[in-house]
Image (cartoon, rainbow, N blue to C red):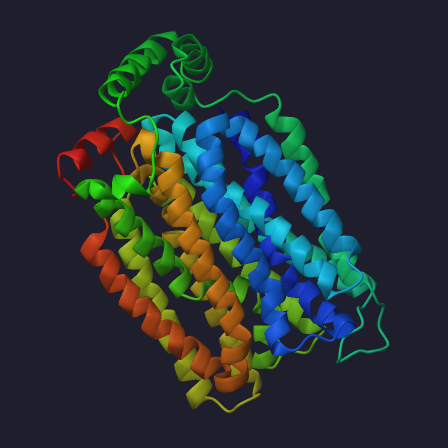
Length: 459
């Protein structure tokens, strides 16, 4: 099972690297292409719009062709999008290439958590499913580190350093091709989800996979539970928007959408995508900001590890998420206070903002980011899982794109004070909505959750 997790989470690693690499590559790209604040935001948000569409489509593809085969296809799309981004001579080629890359990022964000949650045993579902989020932040940290190393060896040409090396950002983007190849080769050898086999009526294949990842005795007991549920759903073979006519399905989709948007409403990607620029705004030099940003990325990895190994299967998912929203609000309030109370550009303000941004990311990863993706993969019944998670991820990525487009404008118009004051308000709003709508999904099998929700029990 551990080998399956490692291979599948190459999709998360790609997700993380592709969303994090612009943190250091954007400034030299901005200088070379002559980007404005609006087109800078577009370079970021076009990937996220592609991710929204990729998430929606991948859920349906995973239901039709299988989780494993869909991940193989996504590896190819990752590679093609990376190649186009690296060789792009202008914005006219870069934007479509980033969009294609976004299709793969969004697809992986849906299919990898579904694949892992359907293969993992109940008692380890949170820890194993959440490793995809660890792979995401590991990919982002790798991007930050690679950017810092490349920038130190070949200082890129930027507005601050116009005599630097041109095209350095292309090398930063090219590294993404390596995990794409690993994902493609690795997934060719991995088993399919037994729950997908059950949906296709392929009980012998499902049992063979369960034998492989569980052992014979437990495999037969789990197969019997899955088969019983599949027979009860025989008339619900294809999920569609028409299923929103079912009250409990509508309730679950609403909770998933609020959770998805709420995770982005904290402004987490103002740091994970624009961290280098944020640190420059706080007072770091163009050379020091990428190095300082590695500290922030390290906080994300530490938070994910702590969540996976100490919290995710011990603390109810709902409790973790609501605690996280409260602590994130405290971090935002502290950032606003520092920008108002300490002298602008002072050493004390610069380093206080660095520490608070790292603390924000540490809190977000410890309580929210891992938990969000695990929870989304658990909310929906088997016959609706690919479609439902695809719809939730569509909304998440659209919210991500909106944040990605808005951050350069927020920083330009309101500085760090206005930016994190805005995120303080949006976090408070969605924290309240999550409190009102989100059920707990931990401690029960996916089949037990489905029966409870269908009976109107959303505790």
